[in-house]
Length: 397
Ligand code: PMP
Image 1 (cartoon, rainbow, N blue to C red):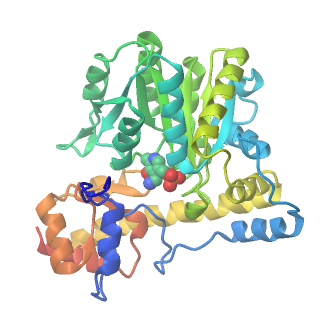
Image 2 (tube, protein in one colour):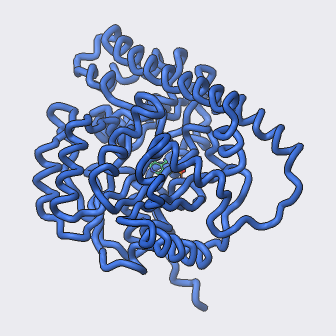
């Protein structure tokens, strides 16, 4: 027997919480765990523009033949424009190559496996804290994960000094995982000046920025959210971007994202591209088509593109409103702890400062599900569940 000794794996910290939520029979339960956008009715709807693109595809699609290893080429071009902007130099110089990937996770996986197989780099620095799956993905591939300081518990803000100090210990060729915007889990992003400093540091110490860009459009807007990436790309000759369309197109279960590599020149980029395709071939041969066709249909049509931007803005604005309402309602409930910092955070998440005992009490006594770190998915808040959540928080103070 070869399977007898296999032990039960620990539940995934975020998806496991989801399972526990589903099994909870209490009617008032609230899920603020997994990062999925909900509207004010608590639903995760399909964007109207996605429905329109799908209707169009249903009419024009003639074949389900395999895609190339790199995926839908029109999609890959559209990704580069979203990331780097119209008329970006890296695109004109053909220094950027993009392949379609199964979600942001797939892009992170393919990118890190490419690094391991085709470069001497073995270490990746991630922020402390970071998305729980980063460590998982990188160590599974065989990279060593080190952490740089990011969060200041006292101020609930960025610890930029620790960030810079820790990266002083990085060696040439080390990768630095950077959240493009809407840092998960803290919601704390760098400003333009800090991005410049990080770009200079990477240049000086020959570190390779590895952007995880899962929330473009959820922070300040599509273009503004790409500012950090563009600042770094203007200075640093080599970088990687794993981006996702799960959130900004609401295409969670279509598994659609992309991996983009920027090299010093177009020849190096082309060689890297050929090797990335070999990594994909060995993993899943070639990607699924539907999600990429939806995204490229929308991005290549002026009217659909505009509608997408409007629907994305609605999601972004709703989350910002929930942040305001959450902070106001907590104050109205007489909660003493200062939560005003939540209004400054960006994107779906808030690092609430609630401790593990409070998180457990919220779950056991009030059926409110929050990740153990105190990370709250603000995107799961609605005008009707905020009073329930705030009353409960007031009681676990
Ligand atoms: N990176 C970060 C920071 C994320 O939060 C997520 C999604 N939770 C991903 C990557 C993965 O996105 P996808 O679902 O497209 O694989």
